[in-house]
Length: 433
Ligand code: SDX
Picture: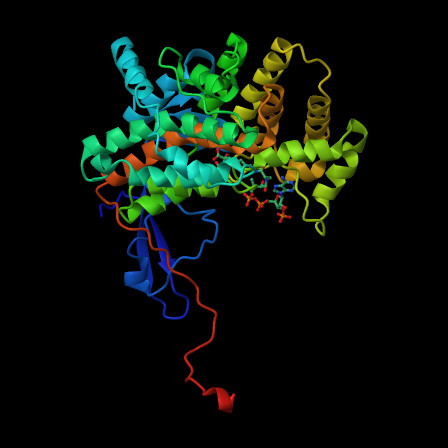
C-alpha cells in the first residue's frame, strides 16, 4: 500500500492491536472502507442490519446523491432522460452503458418487440390462480415459471444466453402484467401488437378488448413511457439487492427476477404506491390531513405517511418532481379537474414540508407519492400499481444482474451475524424436562 493512499486505522483498545484498512475511491459519492479482510485479521465481523452504511458491490449503472436529490442513469440526470429520452432508449443505456446510435436504437427496439409474446402454455399457470389473485402474486409465479420454458438461455456464464434472457425479461413483463390485469377482470387476454411501441403496447394489452380497440391517447402513452423511465433503476435498493443475492448463487435470471418482484411487493418498497392511494382515500378530505400528519409523528402510532421518506434521499426525490408534472398533464388530458386525491396529496405535501418533524428527519415525497394518482386517473386499479413498478424495474434488475455476473470479484453473497441465542447445551429426554 503506497504511503499516500488513504487508510482508516482500527485500534482494539483491549489488546492495543491496530490495523490499517484501505479506502477505495469511486468516480462519484463517498469513499468506502475495504473490510474484506477484517474478519481474517481481527476475528470480528462488521454489524450493519439494513445496510445503512454498507456498500454491497461496485457498480457503474446508477448513482444517487441523496442530500442533493440527484439521480443519474449511467451519468445522465433523470430529469433530462424523462424530458428527452424514451423507455426503450433508457433500457439500452442501462444495459449497455451508453445511449444508442439511431441504428442501434431501431435494432434494439425491434429485438425487444419480437420477444413480447409468451408461450401459449403459460396461460395454464394463470388458470390455477383465483380470479382475485393479487397481480404481484401472479407475476411472481409466472416470471418464475419462465425458467421452465427457456432452457436455451440459462447458461449464465454465456454472455449470449444472458442477453437473450435479458431481452426476454424486458419484453415479456408488460405482457405478463397485462395478463394478470385481464385475468382479474375476467376479460380475454390481449396479445401484443408489433406495430406498437413499448408503452403503447402495454396500454393496448391492458385496455383493448375483443369488442373495441383501445384508442391510444398520446399524452397517456407518453406519461406511461416517462413513468417507466422514472422507475427503471435505483442503485442497490431492496429488490435489486434481492436479485443480486439470488443471482450470486448462480440461479437462472427468471428465478432471480421473480425474487425481485417478491421483494418489491412490500409496502415499504414498491408496494408504497398502492399504500399511498389507500392512505389518500382513508384521509378522504383535505380537512383530515392534519390528523394524519399527527398520527405519522406519533412515536406510539405505527402509521407512516406512505410515499414520504427514503433511505437515501434526504431531499426531494427527483422522480417525484417529474411525477408531479406528469400528474397534472395526465389529469388535464383526461379533463379531470379538482381531483380530490390530488388536492389531498398537495395539501399533505405542503403541510408535511413545513412541519418540523419532517424537516428535521429530512422526509420528502418519494417516487411513489404521485404515481398512484396518475395510475388511478388512467383507469389502472390500485392492485396493479406495484406490477407497473415491476415492469419498469425489470431492466434495472437485469442490468444489475448482468453487472454482478461479469464482476470478476463476484462470489456468492453470504452475510454473517451477531449470535445472541442459547450457548451449546445437551439434549434432555422428554421424561426429564
Ligand atoms: C421505494 O431504496 C430505494 O431506492 C427504493 C425506491 C426504489 O426506487 O427502488 O426508491 C422505491 O421503495 C421508495 C420508498 C417507498 N416507501 C414508502 O413511501 C413507505 C413510507 N416510507 C418509510 O417506510 C421509510 O421512509 C422508508 C422505508 C422509505 C425508509 O426507511 P429508513 O431509511 O429505514 O428510515 P427509518 O425508518 O429509519 O426512518 C427514519 C426516521 C424514523 O423516526 P425515528 O425512529 O428516527 O424517530 O424517520 C421516520 C421513522 O419513524 N420516518 C417516517 C417516515 N419515514 C421515516 N415517519 C413518518 N412517515 C414516514 N413515511
